Amino acid sequence: MRYLYHSSGNLPKHEFSVDMNCEGCAEAVSRVLNKLGGVQFNIDLPNKKVYIESEHSTDTLLTTLNKTGKTVCYIGPK
Amino acid sequence: MRYLYHSSGNLPKHEFSVDMNCEGCAEAVSRVLNKLGGVQFNIDLPNKKVYIESEHSTDTLLTTLNKTGKTVCYIGPK
Image 1: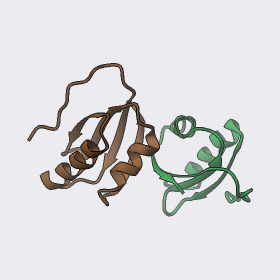
Image 2 (image 1 turned 180 degrees about the horizontal axis):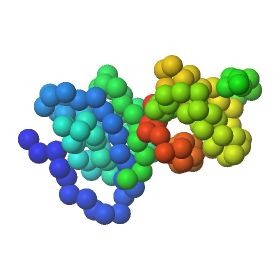
Image 3 (image 1 turned 180 degrees about the vertical axis):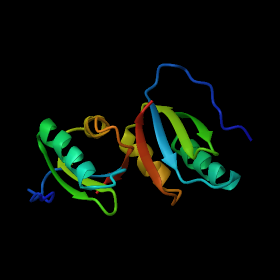
Image 4 (image 1 turned 30 degrees about the vertical axis):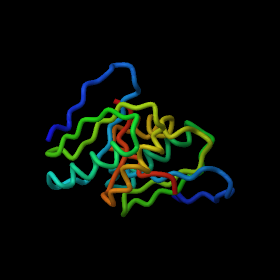
């Protein structure tokens, strides 16, 4: 499974810290983001980071990531 | 020194995690927030949390907290 999506280069980029421990965690994150739609993302499992490019607001992205039940926090624009 | 400010009860509330280790760290956070202005905040040093009520955007608050040089992340609305 690939988590790296090509960037269009013109969407706001955000860095999130998500407490992921395994491939299943990463897949769960991938699933909620794909369900939301309108996102391009890159999951760095070893560093527990999720980079998202999207027009969605920080709050929308945070609420979406929180659906996984994992500890999430927003680091800032990337 | 007191870090608890009374809430007006009608401003958006935000929870941040800030890597503070001592009173000096908490004072540094207090200083940058007071310099920004337009904020009411409560610093929970043992739990390394900063609760802010403000009309400022999440990004403005994050940028301000990052001025301390400490590791900061936005947990979400409170």
